[in-house]
Image (cartoon, rainbow, N blue to C red; front, side, top):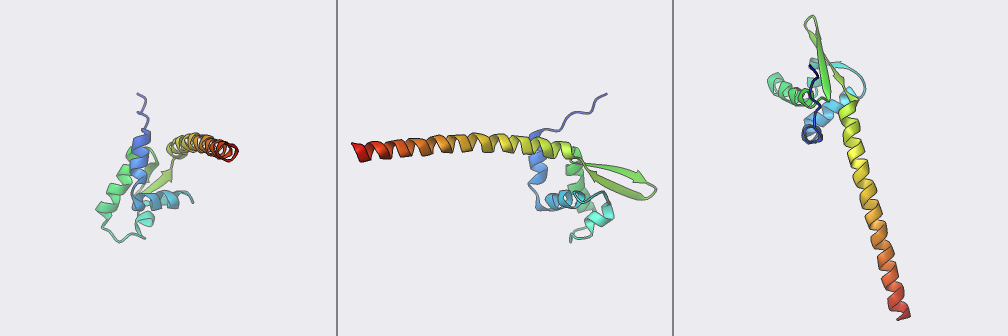
Amino acid sequence: MVAPQPTLDETFRALSDPTRRAVVQALGRGPASVSELAKPFEMALPSFLQHLRVLEDCGLVTTRKTGRVRTCTLRAEPLAAAGHWLEAQRTLWTKRLDQLDRLVLQLKDQEDNG
């Protein structure tokens, strides 16, 4: 059975929280244990595990257990999908702003020559 692909909405929802963004940033430096990831946060481990679960559910993080240590790894695919979406939006709005700029200049020229 093929695992369902996480949606862009789930990725952005996961990244909407500063704790989860910090975890993603930490995992960008390489895999880490749950205890290493939880250390900088002033919260109970069950609360931290809820954040980790959100990251797992959207596909940003995978975990594997070796003995008593649970190691987390960042998955780049959901971040790449979000990046592509953001880039498409940036391209669209840059084009629209360029068109608006040309229109404003055209109207200004008409006013100056009118």
